[in-house]
Length: 344
Ligand code: DAH
Image 1: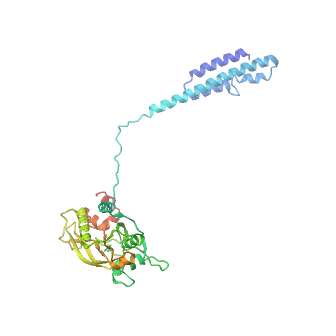
Image 2: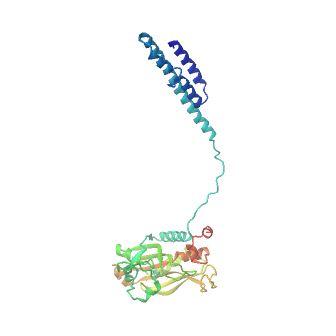
Image 3: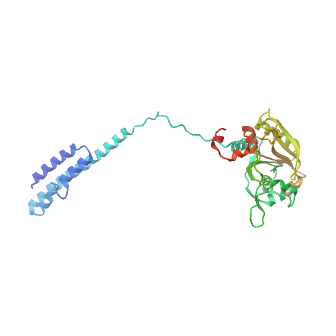
């Protein structure tokens, strides 16, 4: 093989490379010219070993330039082919941005969560801060500091879930009222807070009772707070929640930590006062307890009852949600039946 032969081989290789349509054909051309075994240009390398001197130098130069030219052409063509297949791919993947989507399933808040948010909004307008407290409490804060020493009869109404423990009297809080105490102990008056949260009692489930339920506690302590402020606040909030038309009444009641004490009832949302299964025949559903904070409770919390007075309340957002949305049984709120929940 001579230098001219190599040049001729390189020329025909370049022509073929320019003509290939895809990477397989390109690889086939590469093999025919450059493969170590059987490549026609590569064959010159074997021949180099057999010649000497000037002849060897000339053949070597011709071999290097032929191989270099072909290798470079192969690489250039390879890049062109890759670029082409990228563009072909792009145009094949065209998409229709006007094609309609599957209908989106939109979630929404649970009726109790929505009610709690609304209660928070109403009280925020009145200047109340919403705070959270621990669900696991001790006997001291849940009962004793609220004028319910051990053996106090008012404890019977609480049917407490006690937790096994180290004798510290751990329990699942039976109401959110312990946060009144924690708030007052941690700061200085004036206080205006609400405390939404979960509570639990060993109640027998019925249309107005579920063992786990929600409460929103409230506390307002300042100089010169009177029962008129309590009544005005409750009436305003209940009107906001239920509208002007719905029957609402306040009744005298008793709680060890308030004096005097009041309860508020709202006309049953199902029978509007007639008496039905949902209100257990009463026509009214109790939704909150309240009263003027007992002076002893203020003193226990380190607030001077001669300078300050206040009112407190605890309302039940589960019952409020049931009353507002016409839910017949509060237990339905805890069954997580989507068919029911999607209706709100
Ligand atoms: N803790 C009471 C309950 O669970 C509700 C309550 C009554 C809260 C009077 C208060 C209050 O803050 O002053 O039934």
